[in-house]
Amino acid sequence: MRKFLLILVCLFAVTNVANATDCGSDKECKESLLYANISLPDNIGAKYCKENKVNNISIVWSGVNDKRSNNELGILQKGKEESRILESKPVAELLNERVKDLLTRCGYNLNDKAKVNVGINLDEFFADTKKGIIIGKTEAKSAITIDLRNAYRSYELNFSASKEIKGFNGKKLSKLESSLSEVLVMVLEEFISSKQFVESVQELNKI
Image 1 (tube, helix red, strand yellow):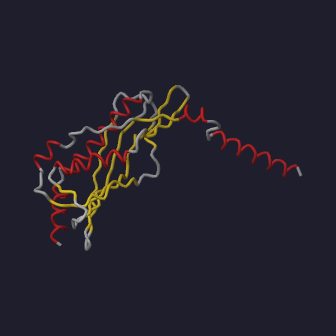
Image 2 (cartoon, one colour):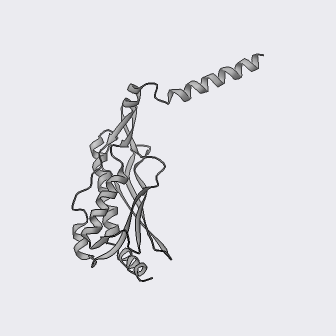
Image 3 (cartoon, helix red, strand yellow):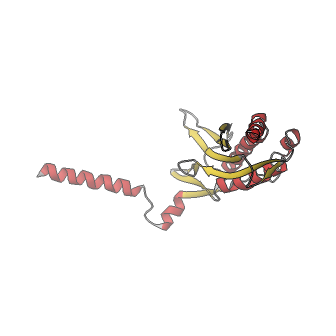
């Protein structure tokens, strides 16, 4: 009997610990979550379009598919309190808007009747914090996969970017926002300046 009661007490304690990690009220939820504003400039990739512009190649734009398991961008710590950082606007939506404009400015004709489908998978986008013995290190990361396909063949091109967030002490949200926005710009510029992307689209158009 004593053994049975002990098991019940242990189960009750575990349940309480699990519930403590959940938001008990709306107020608690608001206190534990922060929302980051990620931005991309309107003229993103402008210089690369001049260097790598194509002549009116038609493609079907398939949009952006968010492949991440969740939209958490990182952790902000103030004293003993930790706040999870989420995106105020879905990054996939922001990418979709900017990439459509970027492709058009770089000479691609977005046409639903074209032979080649082009889409983006958002694989990674977050700030990774690794705690060291003396000081921690925070790195902003972004990774995308360009999915290219026609009726007969498909290609996948992978692009990634990362940057250490210097001077970040885990307390300033603005520092995290600007660094994450920057690595998103970096990965898009890597993609649009890729000769492999241009050659793959041209090859698929010929098949």
